[in-house]
Image (tube, rainbow, N blue to C red; front, top):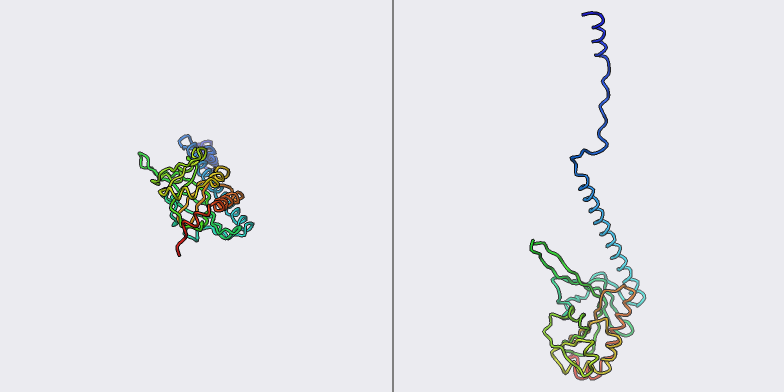
Length: 258
């Protein structure tokens, strides 16, 4: 081997190898990064919706607590009274139901319970997927001081949602304006006429448009669409107004036994 060739071989053995190329900064075309970004965005959106729902729920609870203090009532997140055991048609609707944010106590001489109520209808599509449709209300229950047959009063659209499961017949009154505005159902026509007299009709026409009313035994349920906590006074005031307009004949002809 010549001296020149030997020098070349030695030089090759001692020459450092070039550094390995850095890892690819950009992904290879085979990775579905668009799909991954969509999934990450979907997870983030679900998290954001959940967080906003939590904030809304928290604000509503705080709103009910504030109203309880202002009205001199007690507040409970859950239902301590077993409200769903009351025999109102609204509480028999749906495949599931619940009560929360309960105010209770005496307001302007009236013993009451006001609360959020919801129920859902569950359905299954042709592929076996289950979904739920929720309906939400704000309600007040107050005593009536009489033993009353079941009776429901409400606007046609509201009544259809609230008490459509009942087999009661629609009761007509002499006031055609009232008949057009309200749907009254019950099995005791005499009681309906005793309760819904001319004075009560006029009050309902002026103040009852946004509510449904159910009377069962010695309890009255006033229910309306879900409202902000600051508007609970209107719901409670409507319940009191109804009781204030119950004719004296009802209290005398349908006394509470015992």
